[in-house]
Amino acid sequence: MLDEHILDNYMNAGSIANKVLEYYSKLVVPGASILDIIEKTEQKITELGAVSACPVTLSSNSIAAHDTATINDPRKISDTDIVKADLAVMIDGCIADTATTICLDPNHKDLKKTAKDAVDSAIKNAKPGTMTSEIGAIIEDIITSAGFQPIRNLTGHKLDVYKLHAGISIPNYDDGRKIEMEEGMVFAIEPFCTTGKGMIKESGSPIIFRYLRGNTRLASARKILDLSKNKFHNMPFSKRWIQMNPLILDNALSNLYNSGIIECYPPLKEVSDGLVAQQEHTVIVADKPIVTTK
Image (cartoon, rainbow, N blue to C red; front, top):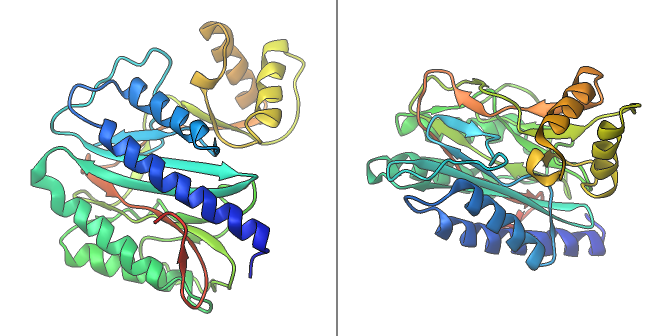
């Protein structure tokens, strides 16, 4: 089982994440500025004593994940949007990752309900000895029984201290892999369901980045690396978080990406433009699973 201090940090991070997600959800109303929503949500994380483990994302309709506000983002919420509100908070490296779907169009509330039913059933089975594929099978059965498709190339993931994706995935379908959950492991379980074919592709320019390895001689790029290592804890970051001339910033990020020093995360779109819903909780594997984000 987890060290008591580590467990406390995970539980406190989960409590904060839950409060912030509730706050976030109330901001998502027709006509609201996406930039304003995301910046207020990130500020709330700081006010409550945690830090963002990655940029807060707001992915609408057929965009499943990885969409966040850009610098001076002009976009606003529509009265028919299906919004995936996703955030991750961190205390001393211990992460709570959570998400919900906000259906402003009541005609698609069944899509949200299906994602919620899937995550609720999945987290109840996050016990020692359970195979990750068994969790995937539970998710798949609930989603397909409701007439939708799980997104097969998006997964939940193991969490570790200062690691948002720690090497083990939780599929949204039965992938047949015999990877056993062990007591004390921490997972973000996040079913995605769609009215489409059930696959996503990269769409648009990257707006989230993460340091991998290496260094550079370019002064502006070195500034980004310094922030990444010392302020962002080598976790994913947004262009919005860096105070720099936009042209210089883009050039520095290109230099880092082309050198293999950072990786980029573009928005992820359902391949057939299907609508997407998501629900996510963080759970600690135990005989009675511990959900930190409830």
